[in-house]
Image 1 (cartoon, rainbow, N blue to C red):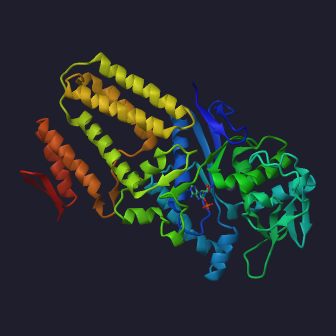
Image 2: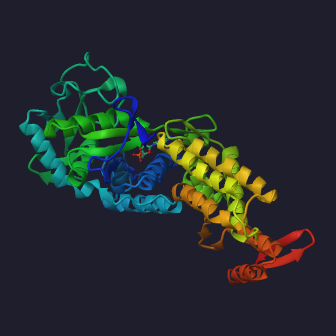
Image 3: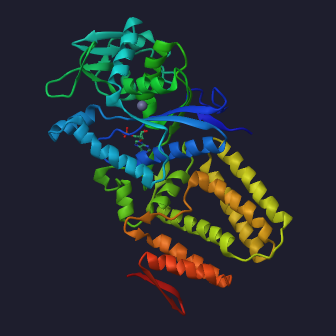
Length: 466
Ligand code: AMP
Ligand code: ZN
């Protein structure tokens, strides 16, 4: 079965391929840079990364745009409270976000674009909407008239038939039962940042930004539009209304929405003390790849219940994977090939692909990987795995890691992480066991160069930092 995604628009699984058969034109709603990203946000961005990587593993090229929302109600309030310009205020959080992405090994989309650098395109789009009769002005602000767009509600599958025509909403975020004419351009308020444009001195609403930037870079019809589930309404509904009113074309062929992350069964909130940023988790001693594994391990359409037990289980899973990788690399297998071992890797590869093709079923794909590990370890123990079987097993592990990307230990600024050191020590032990003394010595020297001293005792190898 071919690659398929659950499309929120049709509420069905649909086979996916890009319009031109080659390059996936994809828009992902990016962060609002008014604070550090929390692990819920990062769950959604990890989903977007897994999606990117699986599209690539499926043979497609990518043209992926992610916006940075750097003008919006909350940002303006916070910047004004601190007496800062928008840019002064957002620069720190934008940088922190890109750093968090890199730490979590989230690939940088082909284009990361700031809202404040596309005001001209937004004004242009609002003018086109105006020319077609989709807007009206009140008190210097411009609103979208949703009664002019009969398909309003088709993404969130809401019937807005009974709504009051002409009722307006000025805020960027609002609830489902509050479907109203939303603001496209807000008149300047005293002290607020603004742009003096042909449609007035003011600033854009949040929703117009994504329509303008998506269509500028990716054309009238995107292959995929992705974001967190909370963006389905009103944000994405409004994006459709804005874009399709102007172009008359479908705005996006596939809409993919990631479910929320909750913590220990509860909504994350500062008052509950369960609100985590990536930095908080790293400070607790967890490696970035452990967090990445956990965030990726639950299929994106399921809620992810983040627990400390879950983080520990993720660390153990990574250990098992690394030990297996190490065994493949350093054990001396008999110079032979076993057909069953070869078939096991081929079958695991096919099943891994089928499972990921099924709307990115990451949990199922990990199941395939661990079954392969268990069976291959048994085959190795039983002498049913030879040197000629190593390459196919490594290729399967390589396919897994091209998506999950957790095998390489993170080297922290202060040198190797504890986990990296332990992985290297395990490699040295395995090399010695395989009588590969050259490699064992190399590892000791590598560790020494990083300021780590080893002490071999009867209970194993101890280490300390110099
Ligand atoms: P924001 O920075 O608030 O614009 O959010 C960035 C992304 O994180 C959006 O795609 C949101 O839908 C998503 N998001 C917000 N809260 C959560 C959560 N608890 N779990 C998963 N994703 C979330
Ligand atoms: Zn957006």
